[in-house]
Amino acid sequence: MPGTTPANTRRSPPLGESAEPPSPRIAQLPARDKLERLLRVARGRKRALILTHDNPDPDSLAAAVTLAHILERRAGMEARVGYGGIIGRAENIAFVRVLRLPVSHVSQIDFDTYDLFGLVDTQPPVGNHSLPARLRADIVIDHHPVREESLQAPFADVGGDFGATSTMVVEYLRAARLEPSVEVATALFYGIKADTRDLGRETTQTDVDSYLWLFPRCDKHLLGQIEHPELPARYFQLHHTAIEKAKVYGTAIVTDLEEVYSPDMVAEVAERMMFLEGMKWSLAYATYRNQLYVSLRVKDRRMNAGRLIREICADYGGSSGGHGSMAGARMPLSGRANQRRTLKRELVGRFLEAFGVADERPVSLLAAQDE
Image (cartoon, rainbow, N blue to C red):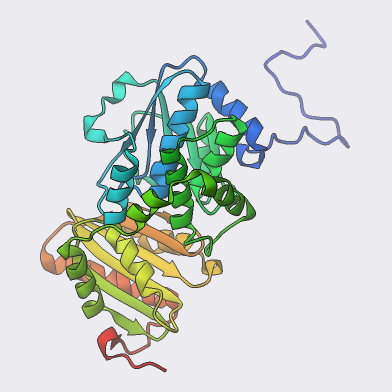
């Protein structure tokens, strides 16, 4: 009819009137509202598959197992946790074994039997997960900086201010009024402890509150078994290589681990090298199954390790990500041995330029002198 506006047409507000403010992102909502939206997305679905990032760490595993538990108890659906890559570090193997966490490798999972997919401690565009490209993530929960593409998911709790993803799911757990089992509480406690380095790195008040809430609920004996596992001989051999190959460039230390038995050892070494007196930057890299893994640590989170590693590694393909003081990347390796060596030299050169130490004369760690 003349003078009417079609129902599917949105009119601009009159001059002088402001448009309706955009609805807040899920990350900005109270925990109870987040939980309601999560359960709304799960409504009507029957089977959920929650995926960690590849080669998962305790934070990713603990958060995924807890999310699956919440969906089972509050959405009345079956939920399973899957991961790609390997669980390789001794502490991480002990973490899954001691706590008897119900996680499965993606090689044992038929994706077509699930109708709800979640990603935890990672995001769709990052690429360090095993969700097939043909499938869409319905749920994304991650404490790393937001990737705008992630907001296309029906439920995306990303871009908040948390030191660990485990902290985020503790808030869901408490909003749902669910009491965790001793195993789940211990998993979450260790997830926060490991990712924030005992609440000493990129920690918020919410991390502290969740840590203190979990402390009386976790098993200290089980925790001790996880934190102090028996270590294989190759663990010490790898650290020998790391120390032998390490070079100090002023305030930066760089080491080549060559071939590693587990890709998450690259992050462990980068973390350990950061303890060298006077260092502001630590870089470790290694080859694993025809891929180059890189791990970066910085002293000051304002240096933004995540942004730096994405800018440097973007030209090489693969995936990269992180946040203030820690970041990692993996990229495909092809060609002959000399081509691989050239790529590594070029990559390290880019990092040294970014660190501002490219003109520093490298000194072997074993020959370095204390100030």
